[in-house]
Amino acid sequence: MAVEEIVIVGAGVVGASVAYHLTALGHERVTVLDARDRGALPGSTGLAPGFVGQLSATEELAVLAKDSVATYRELSDPAGRPVFRQVGCLEVATTEERLARAHEDVAHGRRLGIGAEVLDGAAVTALAPALVDGERALGGLHIPSDGAAEPAAPAEALVAAAERAGARFRWRTPVRALERERGRVVGVRTGADGDGLLRAGRVVLATGIWGPVLAAAAGVRLPMVDVHHPYLFTEELPGLDDTPIDAPIVRYPDHAVYTRRHGRRYGVGSYAHPPLPLEPTAGLRGAEHPFRESDFGSAVAEAMALVPAFRQAPLGRRLNGVFALTPDELPPRRPRARRPGPLVRRGELAHPRRRRRPSPGPSPAGCRPTPGGPGPAGAGPLRPVERPEGPRACAGALPGHLRRPLSGR
Image (cartoon, rainbow, N blue to C red; front, top):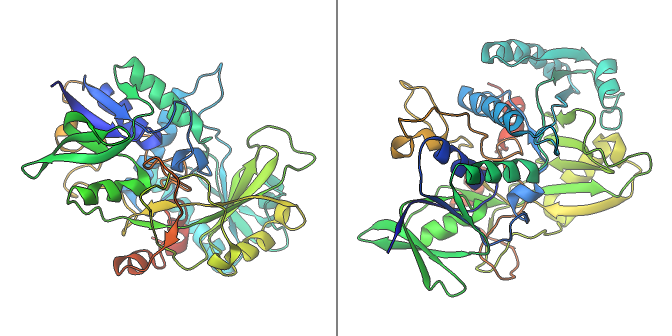
């Protein structure tokens, strides 16, 4: 039986990125498996809000995000839809303390090579009047090089580039289990009944909330906690056209709220709620799951009251954004004595013969996928669970694109 050099499970933005970089590093037998049809992204990638923010309290995350922006721009096709829209980001200060921190962040960004400036309240409001409350904004931090990656575009561009370099993508191929021999993973079981065996020298899990599920069946514990997250849209509004976004993404770091335009609608998300761990059931596909406001306390109502566009607008879709949260919210790192780099540069996955290329990072949602996941086929509900490591691991935690301004440096 032929043995693939590397098998990647999941063809969202993470799996496509890994395939793209491995082929660029010289690996010639890279196969990516996904349960979906090509172009269908109902999981984390397909429903992500799309924010790419670069300024972080941690140098490794800042470098990763800067590389993401560079790679997305490199992959953009001038004749097609943009992979990345560099509309900038505004962090609105509603307190004097936050405004003072914004000045510190400018200096912090300068050290990281990320340009930023502090604007007064009127200037902040003028950049995104539908999203900034002019009466509450004392000023804000403006990062012009941040922006939005429309969820499907980066994944599609990475898949196409990886295929051109020799990677093979097998669609409608659900992975049911990892195959082990003598305590080592040697491949994956595929097909409706798991009766197909694809052997591999290395297996990469890029399945979001399904990574721990597949790993656990092979006796490996991945330190990830699956949690709920609310994201809300308005209905389509008069005066808006199909332009995906034309103003900066806006964050209210003191309130754990972020908001942006999505074509004819606006969207808002909030992390100002208690952590809600969940356990994926055996048949969950990662489809859209409308949330209940009662699950998130007052967080959703407070977010809508904060953003002008949501105060009078009719409400549309409500997404219960399921994603996997790591306990420290940081990517794997090398020892400090060596320069940190993306996961695909570590250990035996790095290839010495090829130039190393920048990594586009874990997701277009600022290093954190938002709703869904490409898990095993079959319908099944989400159900909250209480488990010892869950609430403690994610209590008080925030995803990467909100963590820096809330926790400081």
